[in-house]
Length: 340
Image (tube, rainbow, N blue to C red):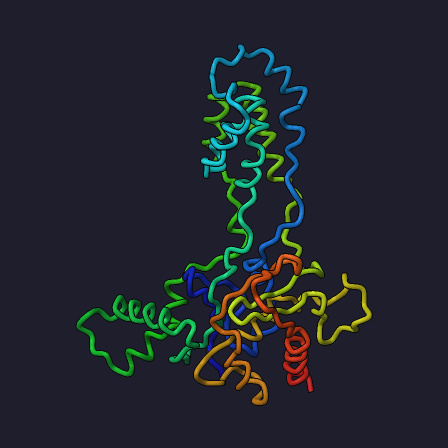
């Protein structure tokens, strides 16, 4: 027997893959979505250094009349303030390409807008809930009750009988499955331009501006920016409890610790560590061994707030406790209980 499970970000009203079906069927599937949604650190950068000094563009630029706009004569400090007020990537690109001076002044803001803020789930309350669940951790109980009540009203209407059957039907699991938005990290890249927009730009822009826009697009699309989820200096931080788990200890339960890091089983990362501690239900049915299911379905971190960051960036205003050994030992115990 077993219930079905879904990952819920209570604050953002979002869900993600990694918990489809019963826990016994999905526990060891990839949890990298969780890792990436919580990770607040990019590796790499975008190289704009050659765009404003491109010789071919400079030749085209020289054919243009001298600028008459007073904006290019403003001090750099004022130009940066103007760019800081821009919150749309395309608007920032178009202003940057109008003149070399503006391109140099706006480069920092262009980089900020081109690279989305990492870790959209960082700091949010997260749990993986079973469809039998009717009581929740205190940290999220009020919010979940309100969401479930709203969903029940929308499904059954104001005049429907508040029966036990209705309570069973309108579970929080159902509320998440039907109303939460399913997200994945790749959804966050902002640079999208349709063919119609490209054609319009081709007609409106000069040769120099058009080439520069294309160069900016290529720089962003070819940027070596990534989420290095296996970086050894990363830590999974429980912001609610002041506990953390080190990524350098994430070695697969059936993998020799002496192996090169590149050969470590990729299914074991901080996302799986988190998942093993946030499952929650009022019954322990989860298609897992009995000696595991009771503890697994009352996760000590369910409903807490998290982030994944380099260890050096951990907040100094929190008295942190390293629970890495405990967390990894728990995963080993789960693994061994299924492979005895």
